[in-house]
Image 1 (cartoon, rainbow, N blue to C red):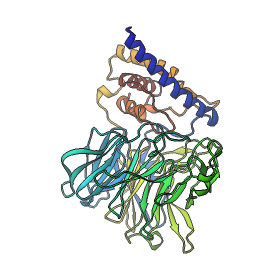
Image 2: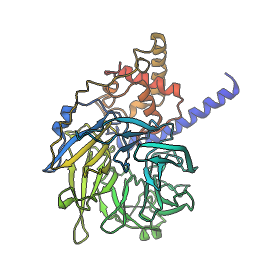
Image 3: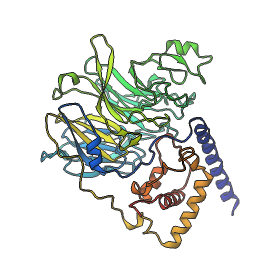
Image 4: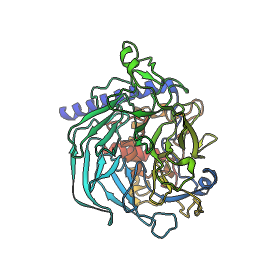
Length: 498
């Protein structure tokens, strides 16, 4: 081995070891990670039996096989864009022209991006928030096609870490607002844009930290009632099941919302509160507190009048679900209602994804369609649901028998000797990173990975390992190493993809 190769290998091992130390420190505090990081291929009929909505509403499956469905945005023509951060794509679901409640088609609109998440339209452009940049491209709403070249107008955004996805929306003032999550659970960021809402002109100029102290505000919207910005925020971890709460913040320019110095109603943080009394005293307490660790993500205010009156100007919010509670919580969509006294109350809108500690879905974003229906993305079930009032929809289950893969993406499509070699290398990586320390239930063995092959093929799992959801950290593994680890995991916990 040459000196340069030895140096590169040692650097990689050092970085991996640092990430491992941090993850094991987290594991020591909370035990085995109590979240369905990988999931399983679920029974659509089971989904149809379990999912519940308020009286008068029906739930349909608008589209399935929408990999890693994250944030949503409707075009002016009624097509639905879906961000796939892990595969670096934006998918277009064609509008339901035939009225059967399902997308008429699906195609990749944009590829080769870098962790795209937030999207919005402004002045003829489609804007995209990547993990390290903001880009835009001309868009024809009638044809559903992009025009010309994609240009990145803001470069060098802070990326990596725990919360690397960016959310982007244009406000009524014509300014572009972008939230950038923290790199960590709790820390003082070197880049002040992290844990903040940042504002730009539409050309990407005049960058301004609009508001700070927002740990991970993955969703925000303007209330049609008062014109103010309301943003979800995920509270910090590792302080137990019931503290701190996740938050809904009413965001105003120049305000600080507590993180990392305070939690809840300006309660000093045990790690960073000391010596920061002035910041804590001036921080703004949340407008509403969700249950701790529910992980509220996307939020949208109901603007149309096609839903019952109680939902007019209510905020629909996706709760992605807890990972570090001893008992799971969240995993549903809720509606927030403002009373005449300004108090906010919460009601279940779409529930049943969590039942008896079994999870079959994780809502991410909510969008109001031009037809007045509500559309919800699910990055666990790889689906987009349609919730409509006053109409009957077809059963949510489909005739799909399971995923189909190219031979090169499955274990049986890999030559025997190569597969054995990859299994051995993957096993060594799994041991080196001490993955079993988190992918296990104390005293019960490894259960969180069972049936992994039913959910992923080799390529998909390798892609997930490259950009996993928190709390799983990213490791600087090369493509070949990620594929070997994927082969080992699927070979050890097989399913239909074999």
